[in-house]
Image 1 (cartoon, rainbow, N blue to C red):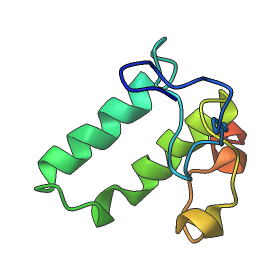
Image 2 (cartoon, one colour):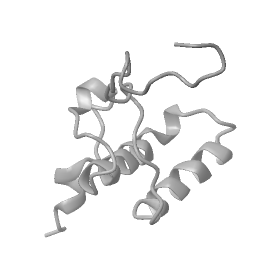
Image 3 (cartoon, rainbow, N blue to C red):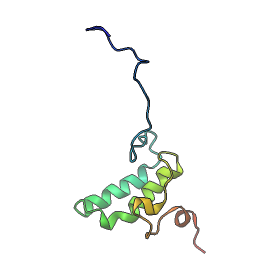
Length: 94
């Protein structure tokens, strides 16, 4: 490589997957309603996330369902003991 010349693209360039927790933006607003509910909850509770965990789970469930993030187990996301996942959201009241 000479000074002033851009480096060759094929030398040492290696792609890698995004870091865990990095996922595509919701450009089409597919999960906007869930996100707005979660953000409103955070504002109402002075940015304290504990009271908003159910809404967080619903938002993440929407993102996983729509393919905006990789599906993961709730226990890995720290949300295993909450209602509001796929089974609860798709169940109709009897």
